[in-house]
Length: 65
Picture (spheres, rainbow, N blue to C red):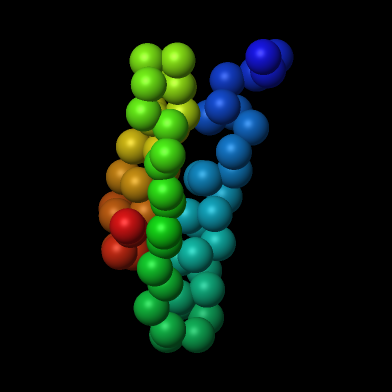
């Protein structure tokens, strides 16, 4: 359907980086909520991208749900 993989279209790396910057600038905690309603084999790329995004947020010290 799309010409690019989902992980190339969703700016999750930039979001994790900016969340870290917001935390450092304000001292306020940042929480990420990344719902994943796609659960079929047809959506494996979305599921993979969401798992990687969650890891990036966790490693940056942000709770992620």
